[in-house]
Amino acid sequence: MLRRTALALVLCATSCTQADGPSATESPPPEQQEVLGRAEQAADTLDTPSEPNSIRFLEQSSFGPKTSGGISPAPMGTAERVMAVGINQSLTDQFALPASAPYDGEIAQDLGSQFFQRAVLGQDQLRQRVAFALGQILVVSQNGIPESTKTAYPDAPVALAGYMNLLSQHAFGNFRTLMEEVTKNPAMGRYLDMVNNRAFDSKGDPIDPNENYAREMLQLFTLGTYKLNNDGTLLLDVEGHPQRAYTEENVKAFARALSGWTWNATACPAKGAAINTPDYKNPLMPCNVNHDTSSQELLRGVSTTAGGTITQHLTQALNNVFNDPNVPPFISRQLIQHLVTSNPSAAYVRRVANVFRNDGTGTRGNLEAVVRAILVDAEARGAQPPVALREGYGHLRSPVLFITNVVRWLNAELDITTKDPGLKLSNWSKTMNQWVPRSPSVFNYYPPNAPLPGADGLVGPEFAILDTATVTARANFLHEFLNSGSTANAGILVDYNQFPHVNTDLVAWMNRFYLHGTMSTDLEQRLLTAMNDSRADSVSRKKKLGLYLMFLSPSFQIQR
Picture 1 (cartoon, rainbow, N blue to C red):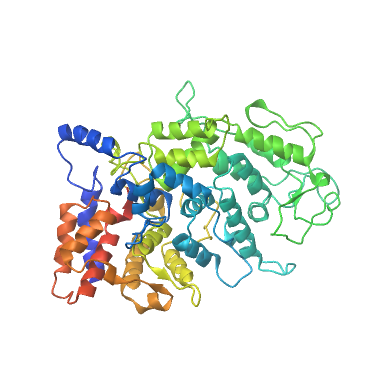
Picture 2: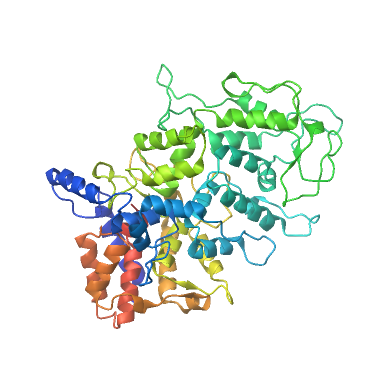
């Protein structure tokens, strides 16, 4: 193999300059762009999408496109299928699919392994992709669930398996329902101290409940820190200052309104007492005896009912948050970031937020409608991003998406009957600082507002975990995947005979599929120069070198 690290770094250094601009291709003069754009749009619709548009759609709505391999009719997950039935019907088909087999926390297989197995092989690609995005907004980490000697099963895996199944089940449901399911979920209850959060001490005297869940529910799961316009921009006061979305008093009020929930059991404990045997298989149980029944002032001057029950107060508290004007833009923008682009325009956020507010039938929070709106929007569709938005468009593929896109594009076969290939994929992702489902904190693997290095005003969430170590880990993953026997030994098999044998044909293949026609002349020449080097002395080595350098290039690393 060529000096892979040095050569890859040279390639990245030269490719980054062209990839940082409006497009990874040489653009025609401005006066021609508008004419070309109109002609392209006329022929490339949601019902008759072009191949590049179909590939981009699959990059946004799945864990990576696949090629059909000549199978007819083309299976789901391939550009040929999307082109045949259209994007609207592709979405309808995905929404109708049942979820993959539930995650199981009681078997030996690690949850990260189960996740990658489903991400690569599962038919319900869109459901899984949306569930993965929601799991990075409504965060629970396996690292935050301690083991107990009082249960007959491994606490952390069972807890997270249940939580991941919950996200999958409700990925296309209503956000209000999801809010309540998350609030009552035992994994979340333990992770953010909702469980046994009493309003009375052991003597029966009133105390201030723990504010952890109430605070994160407001700050991270629903509203954000500051009030927003419907397009996601900051709502400023008359002096031009941002306004807090909630106050410390609001946090205390929500903590009291949500107090009294505990582990599922045959009966509630005494006032001031707690149930100490965890139950990660059933929702938390309401115990009015440990609930603060007094009236609490929530958001926008709304108060809970004085003397109300624990379930009444939970319903009132969650309804109050769900109906806050911040929720549609806050959630919509983050879903766009995870699926399409880190820096959506205000107009894009507004259009999606409007669907969140009303799906056309008067329903608020319809996630299926929101996801459809994100993926059919004009800013997401087309052979390339809209010309005016190309600078700063797209997002760095997170470690998970980088790995799954490579594996699916190579049509890799996973031997899941005798081996555990998912664990190999999971461990590769771990080296890049995204270890599923073990987020380092409730703030996810990276925050949604992490700044894009060297670009004032733009954010690049995934760049928060990109450093010299993880860049090297990305290169090491590719080299090991393509060249090491450990990949096959782990049950991950790739047939390299499926790729063109001639260097120029392979580069054209990679441009057509992996970069959907956006490869620059500069990158093309560098790939051919490397593949024609005498040290790449076999067809197999030439193929693997070309794939290695193309996948490592910024043109692929940035999903546009």
